[in-house]
Structures are given as C-alpha cells and as structure tokens.
Amino acid sequence: MKIEFRKVPQIEKELEYISNSVKIEGTFCRISQSLVKIDAVLKGSTEIDCCRCGKTEEIEVDEELHILLSDGIYKNDESEFLVIEVENNLIDFDEIIQSELNSIKSDYHMCDDCAQLGDNFEKEF
Picture 1 (cartoon, rainbow, N blue to C red):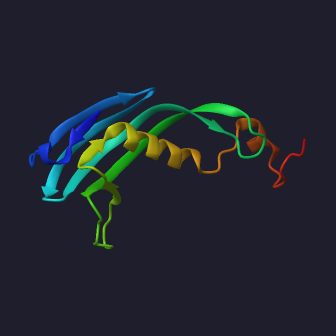
Picture 2: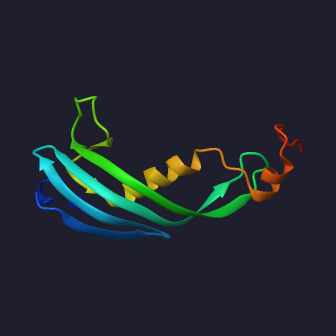
C-alpha cells in the first residue's frame, strides 16, 4: 500500500495493512509539513534462520513500532523514534514492513535444538 505524503491527514488515522503473513496495525498522522508519525504493532509470523546450524524456523512477530517518516533528509538527531527518510513523496507500507522484518532477521536467533546444547561453539559440517 502506498500513500502520497501530502495526503496524510493531521488527525490520527487508523492503519491496518497485511503483507504476506505480517500485519501492521495502529495509527498514523502528519505532525508537521515534512514528518509523519506511525504508532503501530507488527504482528504475524516469518521464517528465520538459526545462526548456528542454518535451520529455518517460523517465529511469531509481535513488535511495537514508533516511526517518524521524513519527507526528505531528516536533520534533528534527538528523536526517540526510528526515522525513515521517504523518497519521491510516497509512503510505501510494504517497504516499511519488509525493512522491519529484515531487521528482526538480522538478529542472532538459535533454534530450539541449538539452544539446548548450551555450548558456545559453532557446528562444523
């Protein structure tokens, strides 16, 4: 789902969008001429690889999102929010969801089998 930056209302609007097996649900609104605030929850499931053995598992995702979208370059460094700079005046919720999922996938995750081993060594094949 894509929305033009200028069409985002200043009054909080409900957001519910599903991409593959993940749903973003919450509110969004424009807080200034060049900033949009999103307060939402990312829920669903995604596949993730074990950092130790490479086995793929499906995990449940339940992440709170507090995001500022900036129309162009964001210049204030003192923000509590994750700031995403938007190009072409277009907010793409598919891209936001994929970015958050990729962030989750980049964390270290061990499958149940490797977690039970308890040693700190990688397996060699």
